[in-house]
Image (cartoon, rainbow, N blue to C red; front, side, top):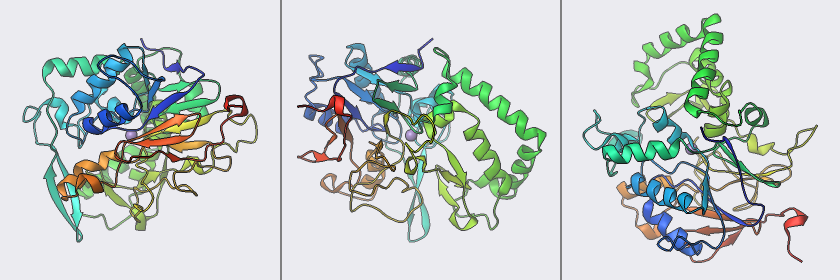
Length: 376
Ligand SMILES: [Mn+2]
């Protein structure tokens, strides 16, 4: 069984954001970082924050590339929610490639909104073969949930101390998540919340129809979603914390109407009154936008006071996911690659420089690294 908390080297590392099947972006970024894929050489260790797969053109190639780097001793990868979905056998929007094009039931579609109308499109992703599926699952089963050293902690979504403390040294992530979910379901059943949530969903076509926006707040759906998330340390680490939202803010995402949204833990990160977390923390998952690309939609949650800056009162939290996973939709919209809003980023630690696959120059994140790590 894999160790769930991996040790990172204490020196410089490059931390790479969510890739979502964008193999060309990954290869360009690796070249910029001085990684020679063929010779299996890198200038410094790499850390991947997870969400290697789904939505983009070739998730199989991305997993193969990253697995090669791990095999060569050059990289550490933490598990993201998209990897966890595949380990759990969960068919989700954007992961139909895993079951093979045309071989896994219904074709995998997504919905774009144009002038208030949902328009369906097919994902353009290469399908996996049977042997590729086995290889991918075998690789994902080896991945930890946390990677850290004295000063730096990397998880995919929320680095909640209680969730990390709840992890055994080694364990099967799928089994641990199932045990936690069973406990949560029993607690919700004792309050009859699951049955009431089921009835609420049934009134609204299981919440799947974009054109059927519920005209009421579904309180039990919200309660259930929040409890399922916060009762499961694996879910917290891989897909963050959730909070109930007001009815006016309900939104459609991932093929469903949503009554909870991502809880912005990073705005308070590092302010614990007792034993403050000593780590700087780097995550992915939050679809951060590059400056000038913000829009008022609800998925746009991660903002920083300065462009490319760190978050929280002590500026210790950083999201390195700059939404390269939006490129599949940008292509459908006819956006030229030179104008992609989303980019694949690497954060160079401890310098705090941010390198993009599609930008010539690195930008600074204004990181004030621990004194012990600073030169001079
Ligand atoms: Mn994610």
